[in-house]
Image (cartoon, rainbow, N blue to C red):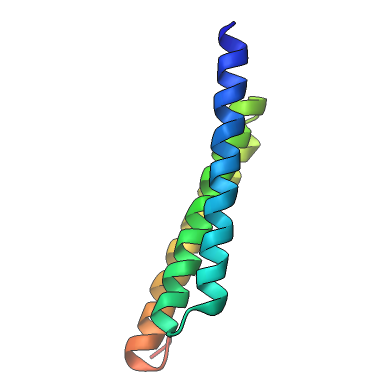
Length: 93
């Protein structure tokens, strides 16, 4: 019984995260300003990370959690680099 509940909850979470990814992708592509596009990209990588975590919970494999960790680190670095580029116009000084 509890396996069915967990499977249903993980499946619903994956559907909702997929919808959130679609909304973030729309904001990233149609954002009127560069700041809106960076926020959309930030939300997109966070949702991708959460989707991988739900895949890991559903399958029980550790590789999904490691991939989520890598996406989280690379997403943070890319957000910082893009924010620095918007503030100063260059990334490397």
